[in-house]
Image (tube, one colour):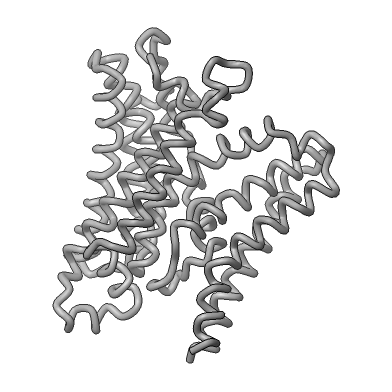
Length: 325
């Protein structure tokens, strides 16, 4: 029993200790500007897009799935928001809701295809990655959609730095607070709601969950719809940074999102994962990128380090499963 408790604590605190170690290392070897409050705010802002999409991906992976269409959904969301703002004349709130709704629709469509066709999520979402990207390019007529700055209102300020502004008391931009609040909501969702518990049950053993009365197909559709909605929220943050709709943006973002979940202790076999771990995983990648950039290291070094951490995280996950058996 004690060994089980120690293992549980290690699984929870392991990613946090890894983040502290990575940050501490760069504090020692990187220029003094790395440890400044300004740079900490920059790290938080740069993590928000991946971190927001990763909240939904956490639930998808816990339920034993995976979604390779996240980057395309983010791009689609920016396009829909821009079209609603500029061409339809909608307000910022309705436009943002429209972008998230479009993303949730394609997430639900992926879930329906997976459950109805009984095809593995990897194949379905790989196809949806192309379908959604093509849809985004078609809606945008294969060009970026500029938006009149007067129509943006508060949208452009979601991830704008608060340094030197009246909102400096907020410490970080509103978009970062939005991400953190939604993270708390999702943590409570996974722990206390029926859908959250059923997601863990399906990811751990789908057949057992089915025998226990869990509506597996319905849960999967809802989980993928939720993943799509959070990818749409990531698209909202991306739009705030770009202030335009871009159908070519976020190529490969799904790899960063999946990596954040895996580094944070999520298992690609399903049944394991946490919101805290995902946040830490996303921050680890951003801290590495920030530290390497400030040290003047080329981008390929960042990619090697991040890739090595991902492989190590998966290896640790495999070892944990072997010991559990």
